[in-house]
Image (cartoon, rainbow, N blue to C red; front, side, top):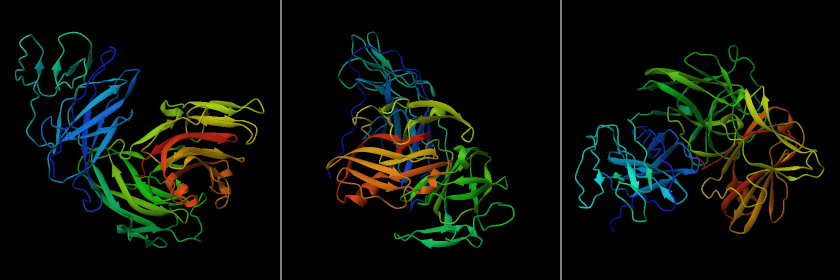
Length: 486
């Protein structure tokens, strides 16, 4: 097998840009957890840089000091995961930030496993002699810069003058922790039962036909799980679930004998990791856990939802996604009114009592007006990697939610409507029903594997890009994002 050549380091070119602020990177790994099921991975997280033209970040990875053979290019997400690593092997990581035509130098390098000997970075100093003396930097404070130009500079070049981009400062290692649980491995009470997927993995569910439970302290079956975390921290909770029903998608959840909250699972068309959130508020269940033993209880509320696995993690973004609209998180989205007849259509930011914060409100004349997120024409997001669409909505009248795709057979539009079953569509459109129960005026969260929806109607046609999201109808929208299938 031919030797894999290391990737070149970052380069800088074009015009001068201002110094990027330093940012910290924390290393997170779960190599020892469920190695037979979950591939080894390392997750890095960092504080965002302050630069108005920032495009994103790049993670570099290799098996020796400053010799990187893999690169992960990200958007503006402040964490990223390098997957498919070999357990037991030592890996070296660095991060850069980049803008149009320019990339910072490498950050300070960190090593996983973290008990490796400290790395002393070599600093290269420019000068007439061209000497490059070895100068160990002080531990924990590496100030890296890159000379402007087109040749790949060595990491750690100290600019003697001229255009330059300051590299990020790699901070101390902060281990995160992840605990995976098989749902069927808990202590189950009737009527909770186990089942097996077509791929042979187990799950739990409340059998169809059971009456919903309104008071978790008085009735209903419970699945109880004991788990241990080795480090104190802020943990979030996730479940790999499958529930296509808009009216049968909830459990009660409690941690360490605390109060039960209602987890309204995402309405999905395939297995998906869904974050445990508190009812209609959209607020994630995030708890400060001490190091030691804990108990998780998942209790019957409604029938139908299947639960395969559970993840308890302190990793900030275990399943990275691209957020296009969430007003409460400072992402109002680029909305436009693409059908303004009749006049009077509006896009507003309003406070929603159930969500406890601002959301986007679309106001028009039934389904006559159209609102688009991502631009006025069909040329939009150009997302070529993330084909799972997630959004939350609250509607009490008819709607059509559309996603715009570029495929191997040209333009396609998948339309989601409050129908039972799926509509006929045509050569360019695919109609999918979300159920009439979605018109109840409550918040619902949906997650759709877009390739599955497309393949159902048009087998063999593949998605190349996701290019936008549009709505006909009046209601409220929140948390529109694309993920990679998780």
